[in-house]
Image (cartoon, rainbow, N blue to C red; front, side, top):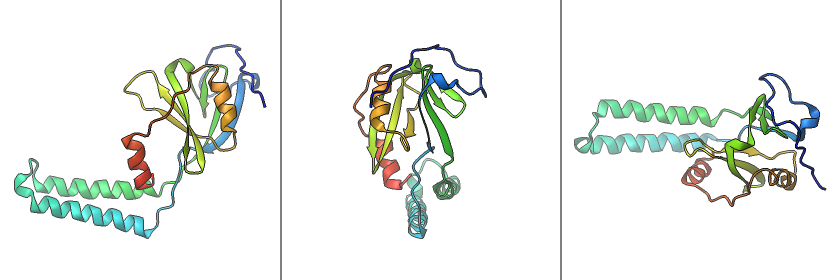
Length: 179
């Protein structure tokens, strides 16, 4: 199936205004991120690791630069945040590839903001990664659910170069923690 790039107007619609149907090339709805169910064992592991880090801090308190009374609450708070964030389920998000850029809900990301894209297999899912031109900005990761990855590749390759994705430390840690 050939997908044609529509090179119509390169303007961004005002916020809250939906893009015109003829400006949209591909459109889908998918969760904002991949959610992994975390059972009691996962939460127990986080708690045990937090307790182990607290014990190490207590044993090594003479070598610590920061007082122990500051470290323990930080460890407990971080473990609590990790457990809390682990149960939050993703909201469904509307995505569209348009003539003017990548649409994420009502926000438009112009193609000029990206230096390249890649399509990555994450388990059984495909994910689109848009790499920003500016070094300090994070890549945008989009789950390709309900849309063919080859169609996305065909359309985006007309406006952005495709790059091979190399797995980063953040990717490996997220996968390990099931985030």
